[in-house]
Image (cartoon, rainbow, N blue to C red):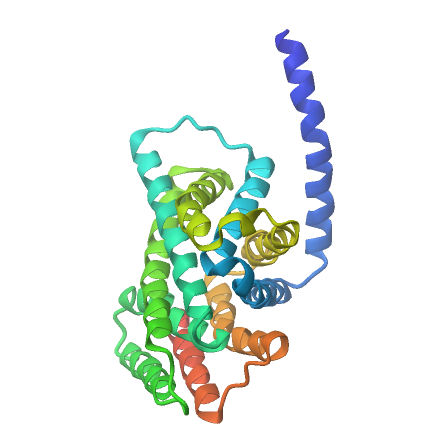
Length: 300
């Protein structure tokens, strides 16, 4: 019976192994910087599509579907073990809570302010982590540059919804926490098992908010289809491309490329949602991007 079970498990792994080899060959033909840029474009275009569904399912409902479908895909791919010590369990649970909170906060910001502005404010989280991780005098310049960007955004013509700004700032704080917890997750788990379990717990945390905000709309086939699309574009595809890129480029180069996130978000908002930014707002986005690039290049 043991041999039969092993044979069955091996037969189930073979199609996945073949799929992984095919994907690896396909990714190998693409330069790593292109993989990172494609991942960011997928993430932000997915966010733009998600924003179009807010009127039907609300932002918490869309977040719930995104996390649930992404968790399902990751659990199938990694099939993680549920056996873990208390410390690992605490890290996984904390990671799931922060992941859910970060997504709920930034989607609430998307609901109230333009996509590019929300992502620019959210980027203050990883920027703060990079700055606190370095003691160079030049980092004062990057902090001032980021502050200038935020000041320009706050003085945008027509004003901004301050609840949306507050939600984006909360997402920034949670993103910083997500980075720190992600490092702990990597120390206590292997492969993508920790990510799969954390994503699943995040979906559980988001579920009450999604049900309260969307109700029976979560079961609508059209909403479910868009939720699956958003999960693939905003979670599964970018994470997969990032992992492949990090195999072939140094983390510092990866961080510099990721700093283009606010600009790509602004372009996605313009193309998909028609959210045009003023000159001062584009300058603000540029300030935060440059500050992020400078801080990332100085981080060990």
